[in-house]
Amino acid sequence: MSFKIISSKLFLKQIKEIDSKSKKIIHEKIQLIKENPYRNKKIHSKKFSKVFRIRLNIQRKEKRLIYVILSPKIILVCLMDRNKNYKDLEKYLSKI
Image 1 (cartoon, rainbow, N blue to C red):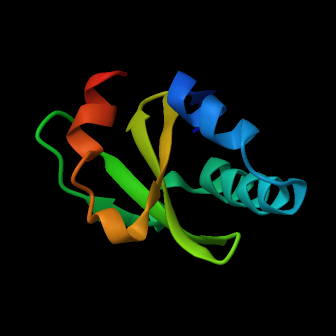
Image 2 (image 1 turned 60 degrees about the vertical axis):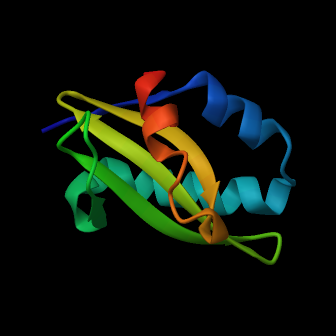
Image 3 (image 1 turned 90 degrees about the vertical axis):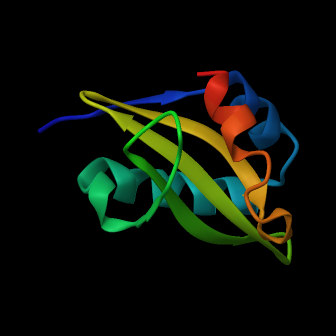
């Protein structure tokens, strides 16, 4: 099945603020998502059933790329700091 990648406004805003090396890493991870979006760890959410995350190490910080699968679309929601323990995840997901 072919998926279409869509970025949220928050994700686009976050991506503008990082350096080119980190953007390249994120782009490679997005290509892996296109190949098989179900390969990463699933996250529990109240609003969506298919929420996943990818571990990233960007600018010496642990980050998570959060995405939602709404067939045939994959929505890139945000980049979260690992130390926030997903507190704001539902808030970000509600903006989709």
